[in-house]
Length: 277
Image 1 (cartoon, rainbow, N blue to C red):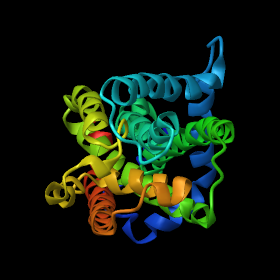
Image 2: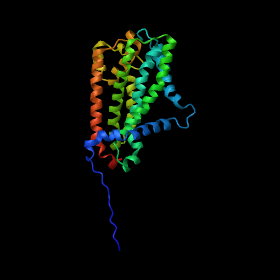
Image 3: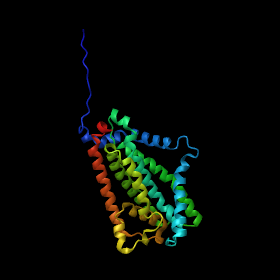
Image 4: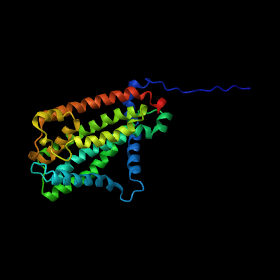
């Protein structure tokens, strides 16, 4: 009888190191497919569809305006309180959504990871892009609020993309780190919502960071989202809310560190994903 040999293809860890970033570009179509799939799935079989991207920050803005602006009477620097809150809610909501979605993205695509090779970074990054689409949709409401209150942006508006990019790096770096941890330690699926909820109240979303005493303001800026939110507000609202430069520099440095560390840790843990997922 003719003997038929069996051949097995084995993908060993480390074999793709030298061409990893070329592979990311090679799999760009998969990247866009996953991002588009996430967008469709998120609002599939919902009555109001993408309006959910607007309703959540708007409702939070209303609550914060009543509590912090109406009851607590916190200063707004001459800016209408709804604009003050919503201009901070946009970058925070983007960060919170991106962190939540990307941290669970590998677990949600476990079957794909265990069956075929592709740069795993494609999955959490596509989740961040999906959250960025929500951010763009929600931005329309901010434009409407500014038009309603007669607020016209000045030259600082051209710097807005810089702060958006910084927020993107903070979201992606944190998301990569937590996504890698979540594969090995499933407890993080419960920890991430707590981080998001806690971070909302320690970040200057419902109030201006200018109310923080000067002696504590530099320490307060250790929260990397403080610099992102303050920069976002400054670029939109101008002189009414001056940018605290020392705090912004600290936040920027921390964002860069978080992104580099998150990318490094993700790459280090990536070779074991298919084994433990």
